[in-house]
Image: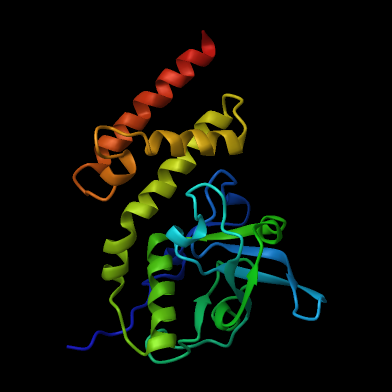
Length: 236
């Protein structure tokens, strides 16, 4: 039975954070929107664009820590209103309250067929203005697959395949926020949290445990305990 393309019940459901509410401690993730990114053309000239990160989380960091040397991004620009289910599959709609979008008549969109490869330095020199929610990322992936293959993959399939990655991003964000509050630099907190997640626990890591829905709460509890220990050590 063919599957139908999906849409959000409310545009706000697409976003985890917008504008000044975007947490700098959150790792760069699929679907993030960054403005004022300098793009280098093949002839050496440059242009400045707002872009959306397209790479899958597992491709973003080849060693799990540092962003890959080449990142794939889509240009974000004005769009006419489109039907989520019936067309415009070459783009991911970004309606208001997305910064720069104006009501239903003037949404923005990330265009999959206008994309660039950029360096981490180019991306990080811009300003992140949006992080998609889990639903937003799943819908973006659905539309991108539809555009390139004309196959409709249910968002539940993307969610099941990637939920452990989304959970890991949430944990890393919380860890970095907590540690920065106690004077630890962001990059050091990020490396520290990844080391903890990858600690060998006798043939498996906490990263592995996140793939098991029944163990995710255990990892979260362990993280809370470890952060309390680090907090106590900083006061001693």
